[in-house]
Image 1 (tube, rainbow, N blue to C red):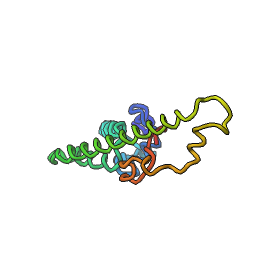
Image 2 (tube, one colour):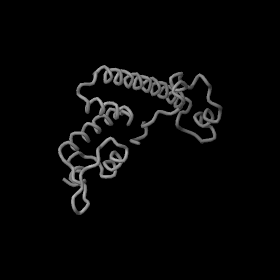
Image 3 (tube, rainbow, N blue to C red):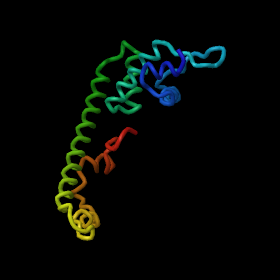
Image 4 (cartoon, rainbow, N blue to C red):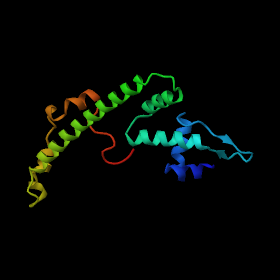
Length: 155
């Protein structure tokens, strides 16, 4: 099948398929005499695997490791378990970050009644003050970032 057919079959954009090929997650397909890519069922299965991993918010490196295990059936599945345990911990840290963010936003929202002039807005007054170090969750500081990736849409 051609790349457009693979894209349609898997629900994956053509550019993403090409990107996965460049990154080595998806093997380059054979080429026709006219230099068209020719994909087969192995590409469909591998791309579906990759897409499933991405739906679980796994990184390319995590996917690369899992694909390596998948490609070597004699490998120890303990590696997969450890990877999922680490990813689960990462998700738990992100949940804690989001819960802290929610609380901060709720506290900020409570500073304004929603009526009156913006010059009297408690939200705007509060945002003018420097953020307190305690307002930054420890998990965020340990992770080296102050914002949760992917919260405002897909990346």
